[in-house]
Image (cartoon, rainbow, N blue to C red; front, side, top):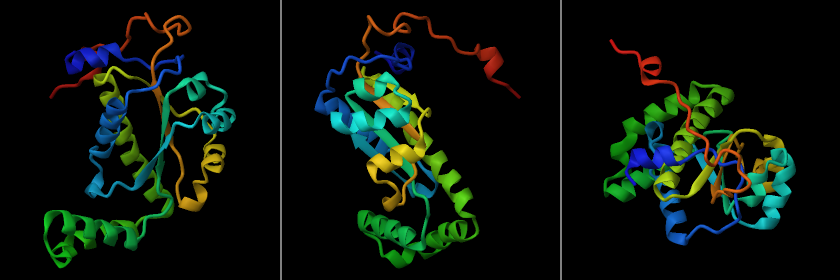
Length: 209
């Protein structure tokens, strides 16, 4: 399939059949998430991968018992950092320096810009900023899943506190904002399997100047 054909093929799958995703396909989706752009490249979030049926069972109640939680092959839970610190910025600078083979001191101005953003923003604003970066990664995961012909459902309908408690995210300084359920559609149970895709017409969506 072409990329556009893959996007037309995908939909927010409501029922999945529990079939496991081949390792190569799942790894390709995870790599796409990893390669997603973020502001400054900081990537101020973590992605929790849940494949254990017992953990998915525990998460179900906090996700309002939506069937995709237990029927999926894997859940990707996008959790922005609750706080962003200068130490995290320094760690990122060290990663750049090591990867590109340059002295960390050469990145002092870049580090200063990021730290200025961190120190001049409230914790709430930083969390909103981090969440926006996580949603970009969610989009990359959705697109990659379509290319791999793996069904995917983006989900915001859950109790963040409940999900955080099950996964022990509070102590990790993480706050979940969205979930991507991955698996394969149950064509007999999912009423949307053969439904035509509905999107706003281009002439209504795009505004040209």
